[in-house]
Length: 108
Image 1 (cartoon, rainbow, N blue to C red):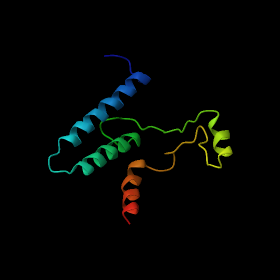
Image 2 (cartoon, helix red, strand yellow):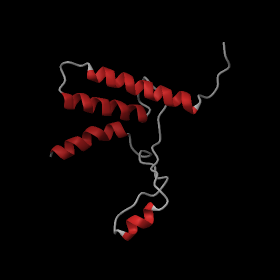
Image 3 (cartoon, helix red, strand yellow):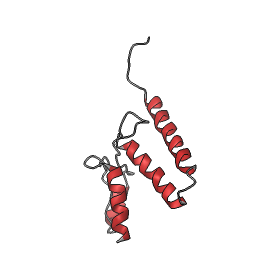
């Protein structure tokens, strides 16, 4: 038996990518679902994983926006909003819960 240790970033990355591959295969092989529903299923499964609510991956992820250092001044000069580096986009909500709500709102 080995002594417990923290996973490496490589191990966590591979767990995440393996889970995404499994979800892609799962949703691609459902014969009774139309393509749009299968694509949405993959997206929902990935968001569920990022939120830490998936049984296939035992961790959640905080998504942090990044931007090139020159982006802010460029967007200001263009009269546009900019991305503030380090902004966490999922610190206050579960992304998988918002996914279908946003789709329902778009549908009217």
